[in-house]
Picture 1 (cartoon, one colour):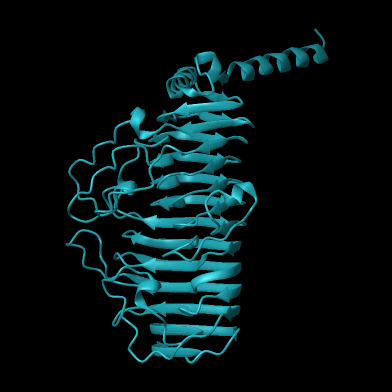
Picture 2 (spheres, rainbow, N blue to C red; picture 1 turned 135 degrees about the horizontal axis):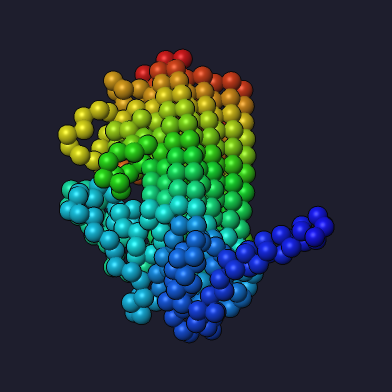
Length: 461
């Protein structure tokens, strides 16, 4: 046999092996008619692929009505163009029951605590991916939460509430898919290491992407429309029953918007009215483990709230770099950095929240709400340390009235400027800061404002 013939045979064998590792869900009984519950067939395909060492589980064009789909190690769930996984309504009782939290206090809301009651979930797996040009439509998911965090357990919501939930997984990829109406979380990733979310489009009714207690993750080239909640959020809760930092995270080349639900996908782009929050890139609020080595770069935000960095649960927020950000039609504030003592965690933890080494460079913002300027507020006796603002230009709507009462200390309050009222300065208000460096920072008013441009209280330069 010649070398050329041998190569041809080997290539043919490789092709056969690769073909053998592709599993079409229709071969396992999936109908794709939008009426039949297909998650049983999809799970069977995943289990078969897993038993044979892994592979690609393909979902062809069609609408697949589903309850819980359980991802396993070494599986790529691939949604082909024209494929839609449609979340079943709660009345069909098609979602897995929530796992037990073992009687441990739920310091975080129920949506951060339970994962198995999701449309697609994995726990303790590795080399898992969800890819393709298809769509996940969470029509049957609830966007509600128990919202009873603290020492009294709120419990699970009792039905499907998340489109994709990954916990304690390693080597994770989510790429190219579209998520519409993702429930409480379109994507929540907790306690995972080494992962990529790339070229994903999300148009959803609550949070877009939540990354909690993770390390070495990248979110890139992704578009998130969240008119009623946060878009891209880093958290460090007690979901793993201990304080774990969220660290070594890169968010880059992303677009965040606050258009009405569905209008980002259909191309009509109708801005949502100003809500308590509308879009935004945020660190917080759950922040027991803190944040370390976070980079946010080359992002564009439209009709959304500004950038928020909130450490209020006794963690440490440090080494945060923000660069090349464009904000347009900004709700409530352009930049918000705060520490506080909400302290949603074990009572025996006594260390205060802290923040240091935050560098924000090359930011331009227009049509900013008159509620608040840039806000940087630490705590008395525990100031925020080393904040650098450079090459920043903010255009404010103006029209604000003089503020006669003192601006509230963050303290135990929920960290949301809307509920604190107008800042006493329209451009920048800073309090309890040790090391505030500003270079080439400009403020412009679209109409007169009765407040001064800058007020500093207990600030060292």
